[in-house]
Image (cartoon, rainbow over all chains, first blue to last red; front, side, top):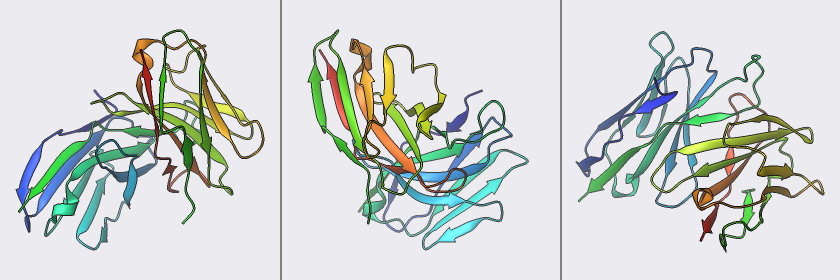
Length: 115
Length: 114
């Protein structure tokens, strides 16, 4: 099983649509969870952290289910500017349990929002 | 807003040559990282650096790779003898603390080995 697995898409949606991305992770000791956004040939940028209670930031809602080792991202009212690759990212501890902040990335889900 | 800066933005080198990729992390950050992304593939962890030493490294980070923080501000990745498969985008990142804190990424150096 891959450490972090995402549906690669691509997702092609019209403006205004709601789209959901899913992600699973294999290491139950994973400590922190994030969604990053990556535009073509650019660096990953943090979209939002994901908390156990679920959290929302404007049109974006993230959910975490530790029991199922599952993370989701919901984008409402899609904009053209939301077109990007969305990366599910997990902070995994070192073998001895210490965390030095290593991030493990999923393959990314490509989203294209069209007029 | 403070940012991580990387130089050069693009480096072309011949196979077998040594390259040094440079990064200036955010000044009050304590944890530093190198990641790479081969074209069309996922971002992969290479190495983490804390308290002036390597804290963790991946299988990719073999003897050909080394990191240094020579002067308290720069953070460098050296590849001793480049191979064609080293061609990738290399991202430097830094964090203030670990855990839930945000990792800030530099804009990357595109390394092309010919």
